[in-house]
Image 1 (spheres, each protein chain N blue to C red):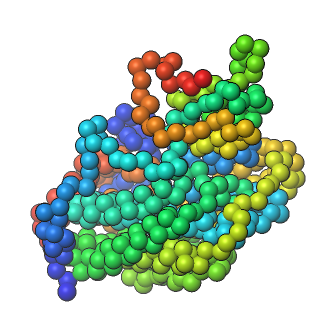
Image 2: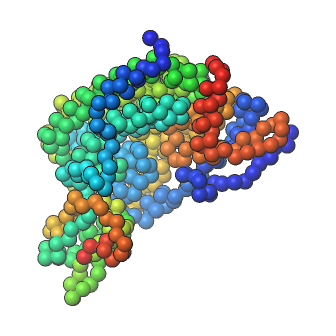
Image 3: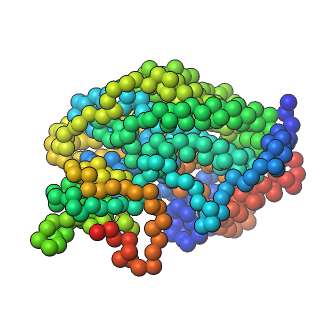
Amino acid sequence: MKTTGVMIPTLLGRISKKPVTVLYPFEKLEVPPGFRGKIKFHLDKCIGCGMCAKDCVSAACIMIEKDDKKRPIFDMDKCTFCGQCEESCPKDAIEMTEEYELAHLNRGEVIVE
Amino acid sequence: MAEVRIPIGPQHPALKEPERFMITVEGETVVDADIKIGHIHRGIEKLAETKTYVQNQYLTERICGICSFTHTTNFCQVTEYVLGTDPPPRGLYLRTLVNELERIHSHLLWLGVAGHEMGFDTLFMYSWDDREIVQDILEHLTGNRVNYAYNCVGGVRRDITDAQKQMIIRGMDALLERMDYYVKVALNEKTILKRTQGVGILTTEDAKRLCAVGPRLRASNVKVDVRKDDPYAAYGELPFEVITSDTLDVHAQVVVRALETVESIKMCKYMMQNLPAGEIRVKVPKKVGPGEATSHTEAPRGEDIHHLRANGTDKPERLKVRAPTLANILNVQHTLKGANIADIPLVVAGIDPCMGCMDRVLIIDKDRETSKVWEKEELRKYSIEWYEGEPHR
């Protein structure tokens, strides 16, 4: 039947239910397993092959030389969180964690070494 | 009669995406529409030439924020054509699955936007709430809500677990119920019927002549769908119907999109019940070519084309992308002629414009030789008030 107010029963049905949205900083949604968040780097496993830096699309991962050893650093404010470095690493030295709150006042804090 | 044109925009702090519509009117009727595009040119095609094929998997994802997966599917497919690689069946099924999940979320998003444009915000809020079901599935399956990073040349990057399979089947059952309800709303709710029936009519001949694509073309009663006509990925093995409508107007687009979503939901369920076992990807060489290939897919908005020329190195020599909105913008210009000013937002929203919605409109009144610049929100308010004020239809 063509009429107005077809959605009114749905609206009334929702009155007794909780709001759909959550108040973010006070209440947080759970992150699913396999979520690609902030990178965690295991220096002890790294062999300095540079595959991660070669495949990084946004140049967030670059190779540096420290203590006579080649190693990558990860700039999280350039990172697109595609997880290609994790996939390219032959030694599983790179891991994507479930941490997603990456706002900092100091730029140095978002660089993962 | 001389026309007054004011050069404001396209670069303006109030704009979300730069694109300009110059509308010439006589009273309430649009007599001419001039659309300027190209202000949001980002140079992605050129950038793709400087990146390797592995990096381009993630670059092509950034072409569009809503239909990101169809672009990566296209890019991976075109690279596979040049390489002569066939991804394993399970990989193709998973690729098709995410393509269809993306279509569901895109069509639900459009349903909400269309509801918002016609002043029916209840529909907007509820359809976007139901969209979260499929967004959650995508996040569980791929690791992200928007830029999935799920595709790769030679297959897909992640396998699916049994828990995720169950989650998809449960989610699809819930969505199917909701979509049946939305189809009922679209066919019976007077608010929708009054604003969409008879608005933005594009005849079958005009749709073919102006090369319309996707749901806009199917709403003009042309049975064309890349998934059916030239099956890619696993579409050849899936049972589904191509939805068309013969009413040719914006309401036809609402119905086509709603019923297409129902088809997609059924396809997702079918894929979960008939998922082949085996590998999800094959290893491919980093250097591609030399060779040239073209691939097309059915994006939520229509046919999307990628053309690749490879020269034997690890970087493409040329990548050409034709997104569906570019094909559809021509028929918007045609459809706007003869429409009321109040129908402009709905006609433009009808094609589901991907790059740049109609943020700024310059109205030129031919009789008074005056012009004023309207922002999208003002135009939306005007259209709702115009229809509320008196029964025009």
